[in-house]
Image (cartoon, rainbow, N blue to C red; front, side, top):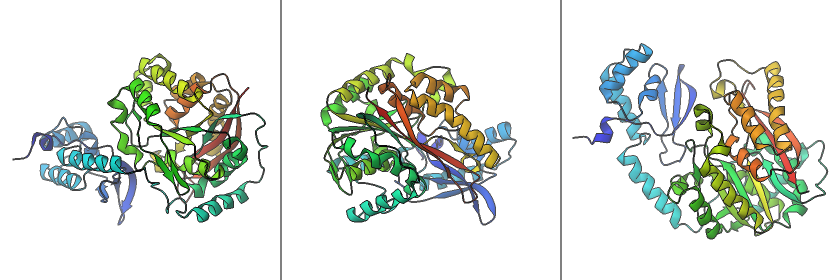
Length: 411
């Protein structure tokens, strides 16, 4: 007899993207945590069923809801077979998945450090090869920004792959070699691509790059966890395992500092969608304010660099838009981004939030929440936008990811 949670299938937070398989349109599902190595193709005519798997309906109820909501007459046996395949691929939030998740988390916590998950993929794993690869990206920079004359308090860095974002990474990080020599602690705010809204994911694990292991101060993590909520702060800790946002910016900081042994405080932040959907603002959220107050104290304790590891807009068919983004659309996107860049330059967190919320985050800012937190920490400081780029997200350049680099300066 199946257990209760198997009778009411609930889809996990999985990666879903449009896909064509043997000429048949549909969506491809992948496990963002890497706990399952299976990918699952769901044909277009069955894809609406995924929206109905929220843990409240039986297989029969899903079939009925598909008919009522979408006009789709799908036999129960086909719904049941899809549920079975989702379970085999470990894409349902059920007892089987939770057991595997718990085992993976225990294994992660037993390790001496969090391994660089994208070494050998996005960048070389061998130290000398890594340094050379990052040096090679310097050649893409046509006009170098003048190195900052004042102490640097914060950096806005991309988290896109190096192949596409190499120029912006290089122009953002290489001029900071002297500034990094003074850093004793690096607080890195990354986008949690797999985290639900209203979440912060902390970890006690040290973070490693190919140049060595950077210590995560446990006392700092404990204080931040107390501010957010001791249990909630670690609910999504395993997301650190494969999340690239913090890692890709951290590698640049470590290489440019020539392997400097600073502390690292890695923080992954979930979506701010709940604020927009509920018509709320983060500066009236007591828990967010308590977390920000504690984080501001952490930043003041010793020479610290705060890094927002973020990308900006994600638009085009790759991200669900019906129409391709041609050159004219990309020019309009640049104008929309200009408002965000101006808020960054002024360290104006409220203006930044309101600019995104006003258009219901239609450009899918993949850094909305960590950038807001960064700007709150930098309030009252001026920032310098050092680079900006629009990167292709498909071979035809009909989908776009925009990125920027910025320095927030003292004084």
